[in-house]
Length: 509
Image (cartoon, rainbow, N blue to C red; front, side, top):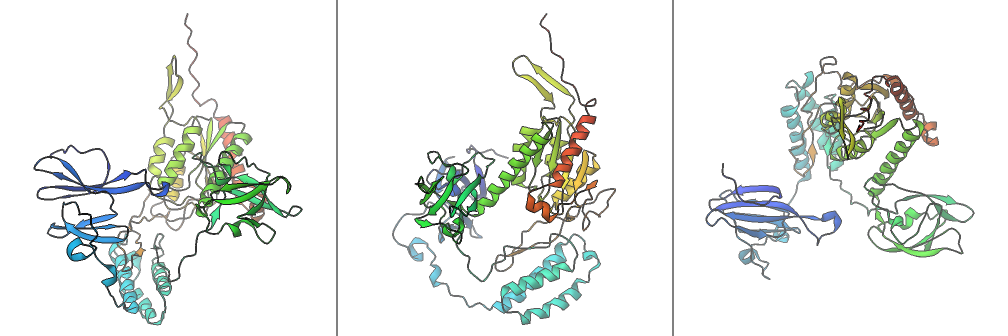
């Protein structure tokens, strides 16, 4: 093995040639917008003179021919073929003969959709046969399933019908995680709605919309109406957007359609006489879901602190993926040193980081580290201080199921809520169908000594079952969280003797 003197980068691909090494990496760019701040660059390291040279400053994808003599790369929707390891020449010639550019318009294909549908059905069926975690497919006669569903393709008229047939075929397995991902719809997408990062309610007397709240963001970023200098506050009235007067039949959402990223004047003020015009830049509508979620976390955290009189911390984990790990760490570092914790995995969408999270939650605090200037810190440093309770519901699924089962098995605390989703056979989508759509095959089943294979299709039962009724939802009441707080405070009070006391103050005398 020979180390090479290359800079530390986020490398994406490396291919060795006879005379050097081709490699690409993601580089942060100041010239791109915030949403596209990373671009991929390509270099070559020469084995003869041990130098690095830039090949392409911006490339989306690249690959080599079988004999490694030619390289094809994609950038801004255009494909180009050039000799491997050479920097393409800049020029006006866009032909293939001289410039190496591929002209998409010269490619003509005649597509037989029905033959494609038959092929994609066969492929989806075969992938399940080859990759399902049990070779006998759980006792299902998979050949008979093929004979049952295959004739239906002759009767369909659009691709959405094919997805419905494949989903029904998957359903014969009676196993979770048999999905269709990224299915392309025949109809075009509508423009995005936009958001101002606040919730509004209609005020009849003023025929305008009151700002009820700004959505708190965990990252600390400010919403469109909270930008410095706007001086907009909760309780102000929103009168018009883009010069058009709001009314009972013309809400803000109607005038914010497809306005994301554009400066737009809005009139705001406590009364119609004192209203003033400010320019705001709405964000894309899908951001509002994220903001509302983060505001929900902030409300729950403040509520748990207040109702438990500071005895309990609150941590919600939305997924067992990158997003969930990020939010867990943000919350854990703020909450772990409270006398107790409420861990909330309701609506957890699964993933694969539960065992990493348990590296924190299963630590037992053994002592404290005393420093003259830094004060007292626990040992281990990030070990939780006291007991915990866990919240689950029917939307706690996949790795969320496994998290709930492990929490209960390790006796980390009581589990409260409703039985979890019950889907723990994992997937690894990697074989696309003809049109780029992925079907998933349940490949990785989990077994536990007590439950066996039984968490699948059953889920985890809580120690205390608590319902949330439709009336509770309308009134904004969360009985499950209230019950968790009461149980959490009770176990903290009962645990006072067991909790390790702070080390005594050291006298200088």
